[in-house]
Image (cartoon, rainbow, N blue to C red):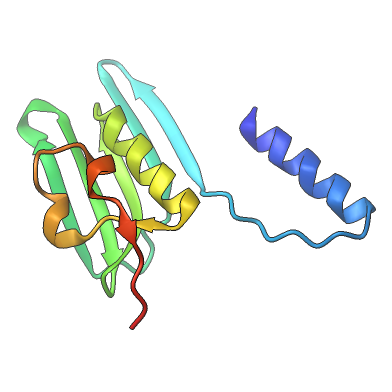
Length: 116
């Protein structure tokens, strides 16, 4: 439903001659038995990743980075990690890779992006 609303807003803006930047973050989810996979962002071109949680227990997330910039998350049975990264990407916040592996809520690690 959020995608349908975003498309309707984009169509209305186009009809009114308004140019609005698309700031939406691509996302996906799937449930497979006991597993819940949630993805936010696009990991294409990543050069570094951070794993959080316990892959052996099927409860983990992978945060993807390119040149230090947060790109995406794949979260398996870790909805709070998914929501935090999706929110960070949406508002332009950053979660540094060097602290992302700590077992603290990701939302507590938000900071402003630095430009190099």
